[in-house]
Length: 338
Image 1 (cartoon, rainbow, N blue to C red):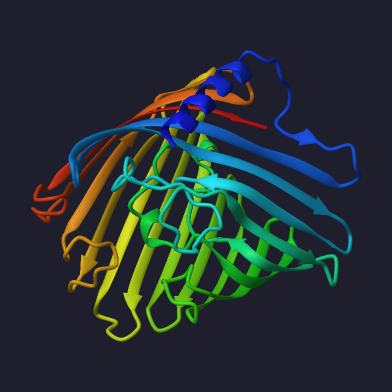
Image 2 (cartoon, helix red, strand yellow):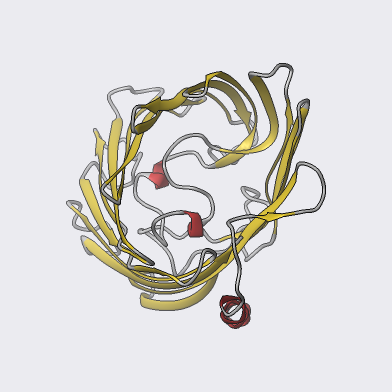
C-alpha cells in the first residue's frame, strides 16, 4: 500500500496544478451527481505495538454517484477508507466492503442505498447507510481534522438498515431507523434502533439522536454548531450506558473551533471521555482521557488542500498506551475533492 500511496501522492500533485471552479462535478444527465475525493497521508505515531512508527497511507479514495427525483433516488459510494483515529493511525488498514472483517487493505462498496419518496415530506432509505449520529463525516477531507476523535470512536458509523425521514419544515426534520448486521458490534444478528431530530434555531444548527444497540448499549448524542466572526464552532456530546448494567456508563464531549483567514485555517479539536464503573465503552479502564488535535490547513484551491496535524492523547489510566499514559501522532495530508 505504501507504493500505491506514493503513486496517489504524485497524482494529487498533478491534480493540484489543474484549475477548477465550483464544488461539485455535474454529470450531463438529469438529476444525477458525481462527487468524491482522494487523499494521501503520512503518519508518525508513538506508543504503537512496535514503538514509534511511520507510514504513508491512502486515507481516502471515494467515488460517489447519487440521483434524486420526485419519486426517489439513490446514493452509492465505492472506494476505500482508512479511518485513522487519535488512538491508532499507522497500523490501520484501508477498508472497502465496510464491516466485512477483512484483514488486508481493501477496495469496494462503502455505502449504498435506495431512496423512495411516498410524499413530498417523507423519504425512506434502505441499504448500507451512513449514520446520523455525531459530528465527523466518513471522508476525512470533509472533516476539520485528519484523524478521527475519541468521541467518534465510540459511535456507530456505517451499517445496513432502513431509515424514514420526515421533513416538518425547512428548519426541522425527524427520523427513525432499524439496522441489522455485524457492522454494529461484530455479530451478523446484531440489530439497532435509532430516532432523532435535526434543525435550525436562529444561527445554530442542532441534532439530537438516540441509538439503541440491541443487547449491548444505548447512546444519546447531541451536536450544536454555528459560526461567529469567521470562526466555525461545534460541539458533540455523548452519554452511553450498557443494557445489562445501566450503572456501567460513559460520557464524552468534543469541541471544535476553526478560525479562518483567507486560504489558511487552524482547526482545533478538544475532547474528554470517561468510562464509569469500568464500562469499557471508551476503553480506558474507567479513567478519564483527553485529546488535543491541531490541524493547520492551507487550501490551494476550491478542491485541493494540504494540512499538517499534531494530536496528543493523555489518559489517567497509566497503562493506556503500551505501558504509558500518553501518545502523539504527527500527520501530513494532501487531498483533492470534487
